Image 1: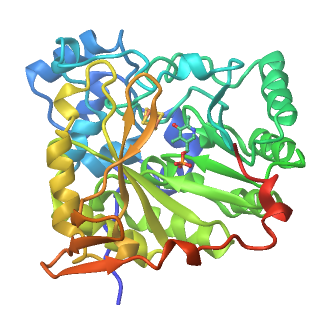
Image 2: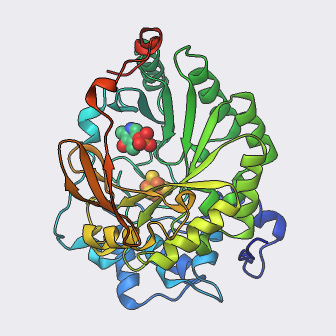
Length: 390
Ligand SMILES: *Cc1c(COP(=O)(O)O)cnc(C)c1O
Ligand code: SF4
């Protein structure tokens, strides 16, 4: 039972102790072409891209993630995630600085409130890896780090003053680039607001610096429960022994973990990779949650799939793969329209009283509704109705 996960070896001259320290990983993160070249081969164009692309989006990677993508057994697909590319500079089919229209849904500097019962709280703009497809290039990597005291107070006040908010999603940047003490303060400040049910943490740390997930950190989550964890793995090879350990530490300590992946051209845009990733995650008790279409942020055309290709990847797995293994395919409607789920359509015919479907493996049948008059309203609706977002 179980998978044999890849082990990322430190380069010669780096002690195991340094390698397994997340602070060492941050202090030694790579930013220049020369530093990248210690882990992977770069073409002339790639070296040039370091000079040209930095102005539009920061460049950084942890030695750990560089060793995973490069080293003696390189994964070219994963290198496309972290490596600047000259294609980032050319005009694409669509390029928006703020594809999710977040700036118009920002009631205060660090809050994005797009849906009634949940908000994003952008606690830092710092990431330990700058993914070239990042949707939030308007914010991420601008070295604003932790909010100022006033920004922080305004964010907390906003949440406290909006009783419809049930979930606060710590986002960024990567919230786990904050130190333990700061993170615990944020969690406890947010959890103290009476109408907040839970906090979600969206982080790429289990992929790019899994040693950050320590006993101390999960104890902080435990003390401030319920905390849900949204991980971000895109490729089965990213789940290494170190990542598997980090994920198990979270789940063993009562933190439910979900995964949000992005379908990336030349990285994971094939059903075999999506399925392999899902099975590995499930074996570690992580539920595949979303499979996103890349947002048309600036310089991402070369990393985007077409909607049709994404749908065909989904359709080819539908039914054959366990429902637990199927992430929800979704795209963000440009300019702040919110998420649009994409589902395969099985309906082939509809009448006033019935619908006819052909299922994933070709079985066709009709579902007939009960008579309209039989539908009744439960007696106790009014008891719960005022909790419902409107
Ligand atoms: C995606 C997103 C959420 C969370 O949506 P879920 O479907 O609940 O995971 C919340 N706020 C914003 C602005 C988002 O883009
Ligand atoms: S970790 Fe997330 S926020 Fe940071 S660069 Fe990658 S996609 Fe953007």
